[in-house]
Image (cartoon, rainbow, N blue to C red; front, side):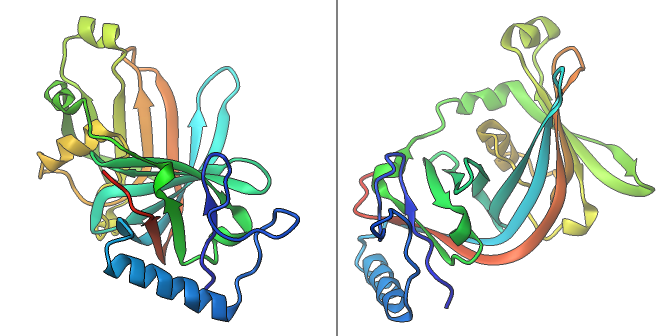
Amino acid sequence: MRPILLTWSHDPKPLWIFNAQNEIQIVTTKLKKLILLTLILKTTFGLAQEAYKFDYAIETEVTYFKEDSIKKKVLYLTNSKNNSYFAQITSNDSLHYKLIFRHHDKLYSKVLVSKSQLNIAEFININCESILYEKNKNKRAVERYDFFLLKDTIVKDISHKAYEFKSILNLKKRIRKGAVTSLFIIDNTTSFHLPLLTHPTAYEDWKLNSKLPNGLFIEKKHIDVYNIEHSSEKLIAYTQIDKSIIITGGCDD
């Protein structure tokens, strides 16, 4: 069994085991079994609030178009059959990643995780102290947005499905609210995966909208009301995984 990932909250207060140099210790086989048994017992008796499964890791690169284009790598952990939650991972410093976990219309968390442990970890443990339970207060925003299917687009001689998510308000109101259009170009070979929708309003609209094709985007563009591209996010790679986020402790949602 792979080692369990040790995580900590914003403090950063240790949730598990550190050595004298404040570095994460390698978990022994006996200790791994003990921790796993503890997690199972906690889940069985209701002391662990939630367990979230992930079966895909999706790597992208985001480019922000400014005077000097800024690029950053993003790693998503997803469940191909359940897009109500996801984890978004970006580099924080030389030792840590920043992990943002969101379950739409339910909870949100931002924690630091060890770079050296992330790839080999089977479980990512987040303490209740790092969980913010929140409902989507802007659900009515779906009345001002909608998805629109577009004609297939050609990328490197390959046809791809495409759709956009945009405001249906008039131009004056769109300018006042700073409304942005999101354009999705889909990899047709990834129909096994539900749409990856990280924005709460887009997800809420998708639940009401059954016409969208499944699949990961090969590119997602954000375009402002003046039809100027603000940013682009391109798919680099995706791979199957077997990881879980465990919400530990006695949470009161």
